[in-house]
Image (cartoon, rainbow, N blue to C red; front, side):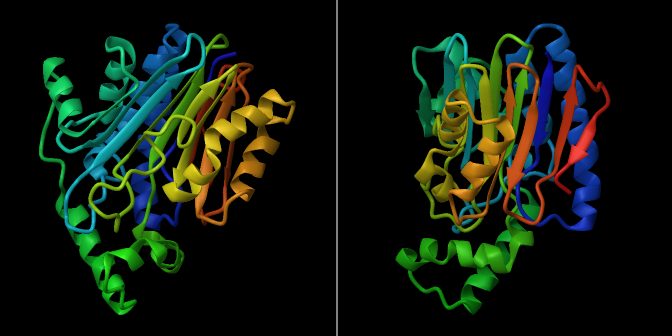
Length: 304
């Protein structure tokens, strides 16, 4: 049974930003579902995520947050369960749609993961659009975070990451995470995730998104995309663990709830199975998602 679910990131969403983001989520689901009807679940996930990457209201692509030094480093991953297809990119700076580049890695190379300049060189070979994706909004948000860091009196790099979770819990409106989509046409399941990372990350830091099995995974009729603090997601290989639990007989919603409960970090996850069941679970204030299934037809909004 066809189904697609798209998330805009876990965190605390301000009323104005949420008002602008929800129509984009709806559009992403509608476009993705139309591709499911054409029998293209990989395309459904890619195009849904691209729509979010092209919006300034999400932490991916055009809306990506900046590292502590003001640099931009974006990650993305896409995984299909059968036949197993995996592609991810790490630390790209100018590629307009990292999720498309991740798909190219999966389908057009013999590799699974590419990073930095090598990944961007591949993007140029395939004529992917590029641009300066650092926005004024991202710069202003970074300055707010830097101000909070000074007030917290964090003076060295080693203490920076140890205080990240506390800072996010105090000021969650400054840290909207990662976007992603999971879809099925009733035969295969595809999951995709894209992010600008965490707003106070050190340059070169890699989170969960491009690590297959951590932020993105699909296996044996189950797929999942995670959002939140990558270190917590990596520690439990959240999406892989979720799919393994489903293989062992746990209901999809229970598996999602359990993996979120396995970490004290702020996280969230969406998941889909081959039967068209869609679920979400999160431990943050909100996690806006849009869903469309063959059974219900109408777009539903949850997590707000």
